Length: 207
Image 1 (tube, rainbow, N blue to C red):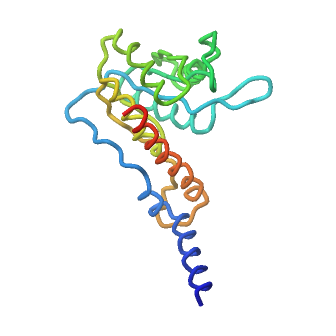
Image 2 (image 1 turned 90 degrees about the vertical axis):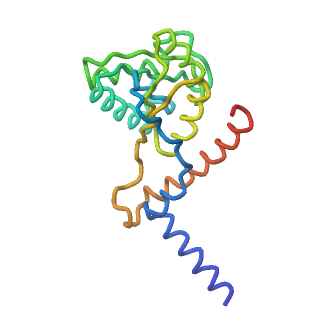
Image 3 (image 1 turned 135 degrees about the horizontal axis):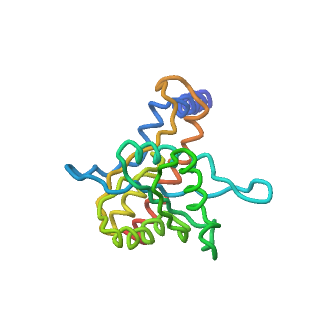
């Protein structure tokens, strides 16, 4: 009887983990957006590069972030700051960075895009630390930050820690049908747990 009960409980948990409406409850909370503050730039942190033949390409997550960032920048008439280096190293040539790849793609999506790149970052924390002085040289203190919903709390806190005013904008990755079982929702669960662990680590080390 106990074995049957355990099986039923696990089955229910597995089904729940495939429902976008249930998975959405697992996300870390996003810090509230400031009221009455107009961002001066759209910031898009990279999501890593992946091998493609003899070179690299942006990951699907990076492309999602970039597309939403370009959409917001075009809507608001703002420049884009694209931040990301090259895996676990700082590239010698800025053109060999993820940020440069993102800038090229942004101009394909929107030829009039005004893009700045921050090509040295290897982590979310470095995205924030390295972007802040670049922004301040432009006289910018307020940003609209675009990234995946799971990543948004950690990214927002990292940029706010640099003294910037941050308006967070989420790139949704869950399917729209809230109560329809989805493999995409199930795939988001480990991403969410990794972000919770990363938030704890960032709280200890940085915040």
